[in-house]
Length: 233
Image (cartoon, rainbow, N blue to C red):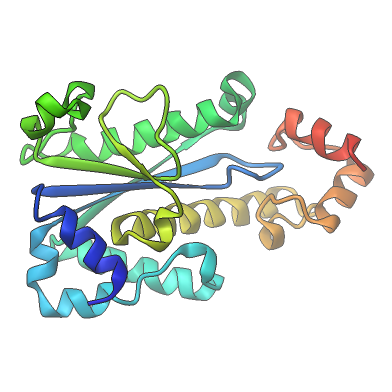
């Protein structure tokens, strides 16, 4: 059992379900911010085959695109076997403009976790009161999110700094979010072939910034991000 598995197994000695949340695309110049939530139970750690499969999971930032796609297939297999579940949601470019990137990220995370809980009657999301010591046992579900705690956020949770390299559930969420967003950016590249979205996925590479200067921004670009980035050059 690797360190990511051990971290989550330790949480599951106290709770019946563990939900990890992560995002992809927060620092991009274009496209939505995408969040995923992944729920694990003790059943995952009782299956030798699942332990072998999940040992392959790693922080999505440490993987090539092909490796992420391969590990996303592992997630789908584990979900088909009823050993995990995950959901993915996004915050649009318009919502990033309206709520800023942190607000849109929280919105995407809230949507993902609520979507995850929508189709089950086996567990429910912990309300904020469960975060208080007096109510610690009020929920059998623990929610952890990569990075610092979210404020505001309607569900009790704990932030884990660099959680995608510590927690299996967060690492799984990071893969689901990244693969989903990358696929969306490939489609965006087909709609706007001059910008190279299929290569840089919306990040502020030199070639991307050059394309913006030459062809102008698209509706998929985040206007505030462009002002900050291009005005600094």
